[in-house]
Length: 354
Length: 127
Image (cartoon, rainbow over all chains, first blue to last red; front, side):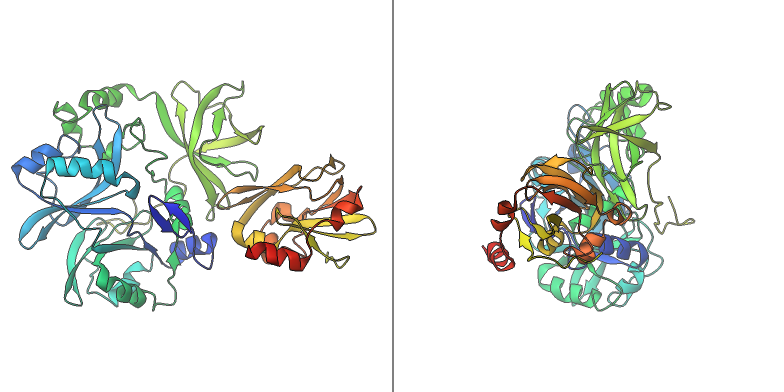
């Protein structure tokens, strides 16, 4: 158990990080992510106008029963947090259901309540579980009436023991899967029912990190922070480009400029050449020992059986040259590679992969 | 590659040592491998190197973190367990036997006598 954003969280359960990781890639695994922030915001013209200062989407145009990956931006276009924003009906009223990082609750909630004073935090009464992996649908369909029509980033309300639960087909492992927000009093029995499937298992923070890293997904506090913009983080696909012309959007000028002229640092994937482990904070050098960037996340990849990392490198660097990483006072050769390290396996309309 | 020798002794840094004809075999304790979790890589010490007790001489990388391994006593590195280069997980499976890490020529036997016995180590872990 380790302290994590004010919670005591398991790095792994009994079978260990690598087993949990492989079980998610081959079967399924369940993450208790109840530490994350969850809020409901009933929308009207004013709350939308307020939220659009921070969120680079056209909130009026987002589709009902759909989830969107997006951000809260500060005045410089830096990332206050990355979020999943979904539009759902609660008791006949349109609500934004937002899931956000535990470590950013204070900053995010300041913004949410400023934009919409009637916002309702629900993580105090709802647990959040993620079931991830190719067999997730099979495991979940024995418990709720989820249908195959539900695709990646679809979100619906279901009844479970006469309570409403919110289910989205999403996650942060690169695999197909679902995230389930469920009232605390139903959570234990729901989890026990999921675990009746003998090919699934509980998974901890360790495998959550190695899975998201293999899938090339950014983690707040590592690839993302208040000084990094979504464009530097290689996430410009998650911005509504028309909103970048809107002076009401925080940092719109910075973001437009970066989109035109490339940001000064580029996010890249790296793999170790020798069997050395790449870790967060290690410095990257060129062959003249000039500092060219640093690693923001690194781990052992069970799928590739070597160490992988994500880092930022100056755009001035010529990527035809060798990259070295300083590990315990030695310069170790590393290789740039494309992200993701492991192909995503989402269930989308038309195709299975991104 | 099994090691059946003198009484196995332990350091506070969770290494085990056993001695046979002036040669110490060293590894990490079963407790240490359990707390490290899946071990994926080991940087072995250089053969021929003279070391002092408590020197950091090699590094074990688990999925979670890198951990230093210290020389339990003074001496010279004689041999390393090359099997670990291709499969460091042997330490997880059999930390106190085939998962041995290095052998060293002992220069000061009294240092070995001062280490914890298995019972002492068990008590130390309970603290």
